[in-house]
Image (cartoon, rainbow, N blue to C red; front, side):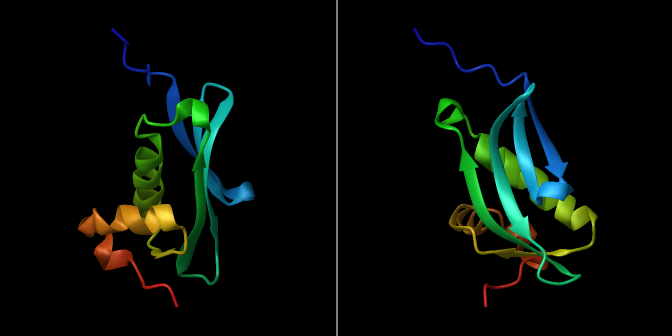
Length: 103
C-alpha cells in the first residue's frame, strides 16, 4: 500500500519582489503562481506551475486559495490570465465579487 505524501513541511509564501506566491517544502521551491500589477487595483495572475515531484497533491489549488485570500485582504481585485487560476475560479464563486474578466 502506498502512503499519502506528507504535506506537513509545505508552506505558502508571498514573495512580492519576484511578484509571485510560492509553494515551499522547507527550503525547496515546489511551485509558484506568478502575477503582474497592471494598475493599483488589480493583481493579474499569469502563470502557475508545480514541480512534477509535487504533482497530484492538491498544492496548486492550496496555493491559489492562499494567494487570492491575500489579494482580498489587500483590498485588490483579481484578473486571471493564467488558465489554472481561471479554471480554479470557476469552482470557487466566493471570489466572484473581486474577480474581473480578462480583457
